Figure (tube, rainbow, N blue to C red):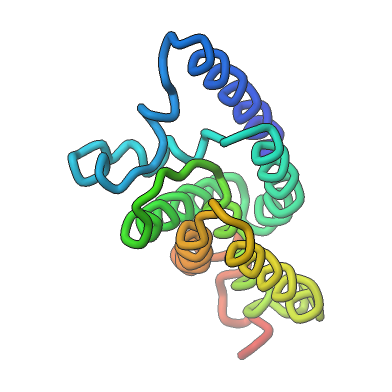
Length: 189
């Protein structure tokens, strides 16, 4: 599955970035993390590279767990190609909103994962038959809980999360749902 490959890629990047940075050979975070001043100076690649870096092992495993749970659902609903499009749109919109609001450094795949939550919410709203009451009883409460945690715990990039959420909804609207793009397939018409 695609998500398993992404999980392994994140682990390898985390190990390499930690080894390189701690050994003093190359500071991966300084060269690839999100920072609005570097973005303004032309290092636009940081909008994506920051999503593959993680601050510590807990950050990495939290994102891997979330990607495993949410990513598998979105991959089933959208297909692999559309999943990747939504994921990267979410990562970029999360990074962009973070750059507009924050002045600090930022790393992690949380913006893209919030985008996947946004995609699930979009899917759940427009195709209620598939998710039933899950939208109201599980997705919205999980979203609100996670956004609330962003207000309470310091050093969480809440702007990146909200930007990713918006990107996930827009990305899903843009790509459409696999085999469910006809109006007759939609439940809420």
